[in-house]
Image (cartoon, rainbow, N blue to C red):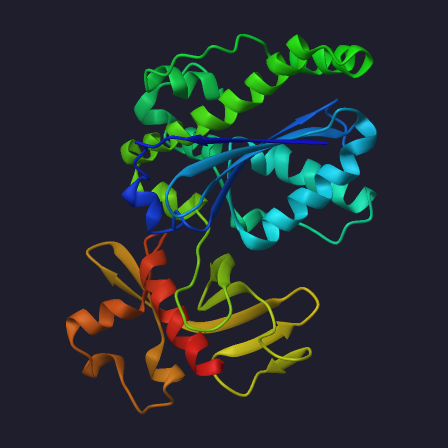
Amino acid sequence: MKIIQHTVLHDFSYPAKLEAFIPKDDFLLFDIETTGLSHSNSEVILIGYILYDGKDYVLTQLFCENRREEIDLLHAFAKVIQEKPLFITYNGRAFDLPYTNSRFRLQGLDAQMARHSNLDLMRLVKLNQGAFKFEDFKLKTVEKFLGIEREDTISGKESVDLYFEYERTHAQALEKKILLHNYEDILYLMKCLEFIEYVDPKTLFLECPLVIPFSGKPAQIVDAVCKKDKLKITVSVCNMYPSDYYDYSHPISKVYDSKACTLQLEFPLFSLNTDGVVYTFLDIDLISKGEVTFDSLAYATKLDYLVMTAQEMNYPGLMKYLAYVLENLW
């Protein structure tokens, strides 16, 4: 297996809107090349990724000189994802993550990438389609919008055909073409993060990893659902308790699955209808067991407990309150 590294993007400015969700020191931007679309009977033969080393953005390519080296590639990449748990991809939710996770399992490696840890830029583009009217959702379409021009001219399918020929001949010209295709996919995906400056901020909360800012173990929101007078939240957090745990004695119920590393919390809610708009709040009267009442709070403090306006989740407030809850549980 070959490992090729390039220092790139000296003048790249990491989007401030993205920094609030994924710090530039913590992200792993990557793309895979495979010998087919079926993860059960084809292989990952090239992974390109970008990391920030504190000074520069470094692009690394893990390249199999033959398909038997896939196990070496996967071992190397598994070490990388252990260090950088937040991922940026293009169509990764549908392809790169499930494909790679499947190859990890089939090769007997104890490594997986969580969907909720992935910002899939294609999904963000689709959510903002109404504003941009793109003819399709290909990465090259976003590149065109941002004025990016490629040297690479081959398609993903052509890259597969070239790899099979390379595996037989090991011709350097073929290797160069294959690596260039992946290199530009990664390089220009990084530059396409500038697109985030143009999107509706609400869509970032729908697609970005939601990391809860508290002093304990890394924690992320996996799911949040309001049903009638209950808010059900699933949080991914490891080693919260040494074994499975549940507590239904408090108005905030807690169920921890130590194997899945998930904490399920259920909060009581109440709603107010003001001028036809429904505002849903955490029921602080029940949660505090009468020690604090909602009516006694200042207006600005009441907003700290706002969960939803109409059908729109108030994620910033929710994450702030969850940080408070987890600090007190830890």
